[in-house]
Image (cartoon, rainbow, N blue to C red):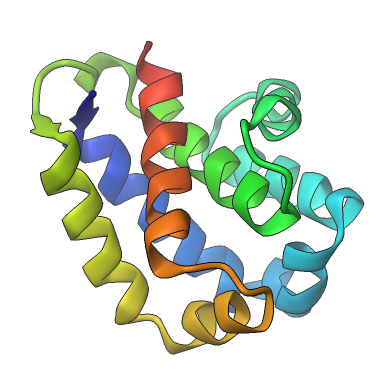
Length: 138
């Protein structure tokens, strides 16, 4: 799997904004509830000038069962979709992309706290985010 770097950076920046921004006030609900996750994904898509309908569809088709991982996948998709012209230009291998994402996740205390509460490993969270970016660039 090859991952587009700008999409990964964009996805993580957007994720951080949703965890601390005005529509991320109830982070626990975003990670625990599918309905809240979908609503927040739509808001994030609008703020990123990406189709909210397509972002919600990405959430629904995410290859994960836990709402937290579906949310991370959709945020990755939004990050990749924000930069369609960049897809294929700045590529990272799967391992490099996952390593970078793991570092970014570990540096965000709020995200780490929510992952622990949901019994989601950093590795699984990074995988979900990276797969979302890849799906947008496919």
